[in-house]
Image (cartoon, rainbow, N blue to C red; front, side):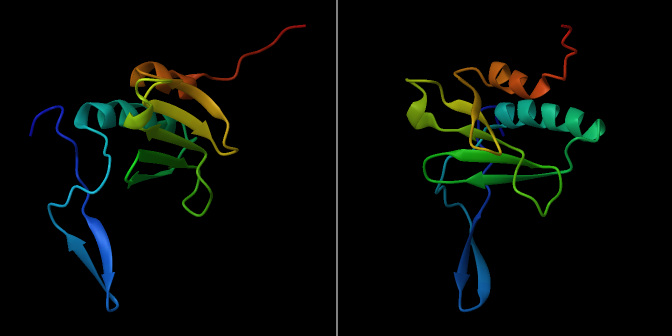
Length: 125
């Protein structure tokens, strides 16, 4: 496998009560190995600090989404999205908070992920 080859997750298809996987079908946008490595680096640091506990990866027709959860039963705290359709405008990558607020958007995934690394700062009056 090369560094730029996407990691393809088979799509599940419901057929008569049984879930069947469609092998080899490339039906959606996916993160490549380099992108996933950058995302998992940030995820690993946050898990080690006890802030995050679970994640989910979705490959959709128009975008790929990496969702981060505090607990598996909650809504995602953050979504990291890759939407190639927006790459010429605002940038293909974005970090979105649970409220739907776009925290950072851009062309470089590393810079976009810095929005998640910002810690709390003491503000003096």
